[in-house]
Length: 248
Length: 210
Image (tube, rainbow over all chains, first blue to last red; front, side, top):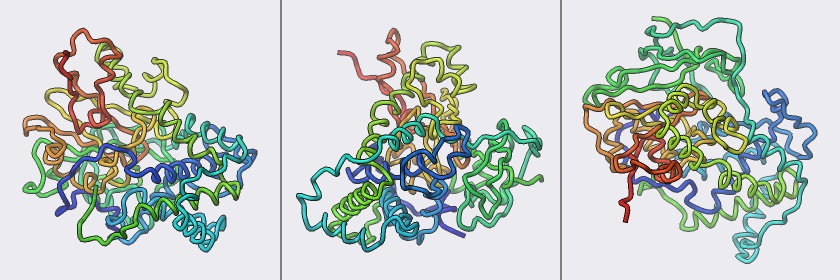
């Protein structure tokens, strides 16, 4: 049971002072760009709906990388680190670790280069060379424009009908999940049955992966939390994969 | 942001991260993973093609045209095609978008408790408050308290709907058109919209005309 799957409703947290900036430090923009490029160059993209011709893109990136991989990395962290590190700090740790474990760079190369930039502020300020094959950037823009929809036609009809009462299963969230843990065992009403099925980037231990129906479920606030710690006249909605749902 | 005072941080926290990400980017360019222009290309895309300026146009059109509003709520991706947007409104993180309408009786707010799923084509990239684990944890249980911390007062007579984004649908909010905007052009109306209003943590403010 991981904290990262069970954030919903957590008590004892601080008052929010809203930060409206997307990036609070200039360096954060760089890791965002790198992650986006990795998704745009991922080796699974030939099987996407746009059927990207990734093999003809002249990049040395040959790995499988999606939102699912980034999320899984964040969910693998020590729970205290998850709160201690800011959003893009988590990305930087996860993504640099990925490039090391996949063999594109060594930890030593990364540490040495980092130390060089720390030791030499002129070098740290100097722009990086603008070299490389433009087809790579063309593919990145193409991906941003055309996306990677997980929607697929399925033959089996949805199991649950609009308006029906359903219950969320107890599942083992394991390494990665798209079910907030606090919903397990709770009762909801189906308010929408989405057309077709939705796949997930890769199979998870708790059963998402192959295309399946997704439902918009409505939970009364009192169903999820004790009345004294929630609010009246409030409904929580979430989009839930069929494998997480059972009949009552 | 979650800045719990008892966590230990290095004094050079940001300098270190900046050096590390520059090291990573420079190595990735040298190894041919990306080019020297890749990161800037991505960033430029979100400055010029995908951002809250797109969502603002859609909301402004919905405010002046009730039939368009119905179409937008029924099928956001189809409605996007009616306006003159750059290619990509059904692109990355916008393949399946839905918008929910605020009324005097119903207030909608969006969250992603598991991570930070956000409708890129209509709203661009998420602000830090949306990515904050404190917001993600608390808004699903005590939305009115959280909204008051954003400066928004909502009493119990207004139904609050919290829309979480654990699957692939990307949600956003059609805020109420404020009083004092009668006769404004779509362009003037669009200029009033903020990402906060279009995710349900703020109302639309009208600056007094001088």
